Length: 401
Image (cartoon, rainbow, N blue to C red; front, side, top):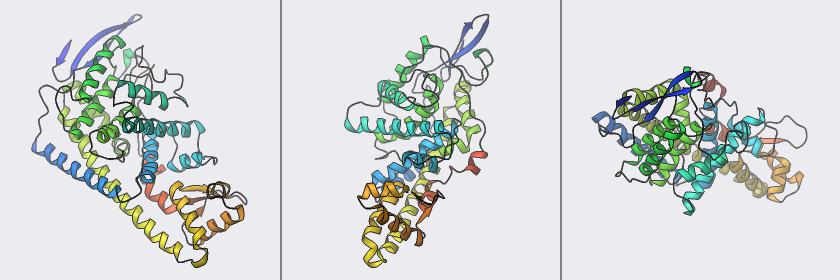
């Protein structure tokens, strides 16, 4: 049952006594080709400038430290879309072996997202694996190794039908390709990623690949998170960004209904231009916000470091403590003493000096083994991940098995 050369086709399937309609997307690149209207071209130019500015600003700060935080922010936002309640503060406390203030399963899922993105970047950087179906499977294995999706075949493409919305394929809002049709769609996607059908502008390429991956939905669980990872990885692979500093999950979460509608219109109307308009608008907005956050962090670090240096003879140990707090954001006295190879009383005194300066904030309420946060840095990083913005969101789509 053909729809159009731009959308795909419907195939009728049978599940017991009930039939249902599964969707097989048309191959990439779209045909007829993308129409680069003046408005879409303007958006692409603006997005390119914002990404270039972000990359340039990010080069002025220690990239490993910035990447450490940005990956974690993206992990929190992406996992919130899937329904977890974990915050950036929860994740950092978990990683510092401090008791998180939320479900341990939630924090483990976010931590696994961090590991999956880090794994993908490292494999590509080292030349061990290109961005490929194999790498996607390995990232999925890392993502799903712990938490509530661990039983859903981590690292394996599905061998059964899944669906989105509803309780079964027969009443689902969307049914992806059946397994025997899925592999051909994935093969086309991989060839598209490798430019075997001709070069596609990198920002556009990442947007098309994300939408196609979500339409194929090749895993039993974790498709949304892997699909969002693909955007950052493609921008790195194609040289747009030197590090995956772009966290589009913030934009997708804040515009969730529009996001799902834009994806669905690709399937029903072949409206790739509408999807790209939505997606590129998000790229420009998030890159601009990330660039401003980086500038705010640089200004904060410069100001606070000068304040620590003004302490005089006790500045040396306090500066070491400040650098550790800046790197980890949340630390305990025992952890700081171990990391800096200093005594517990010395670590306590240094953190108390930072607290007096208004840099560190005690967050545990304990009398011993207190936990301190770099509150102003956390505030900058946590923009968009707080409870207020999460409450504005809608319930996540549910994937069936």
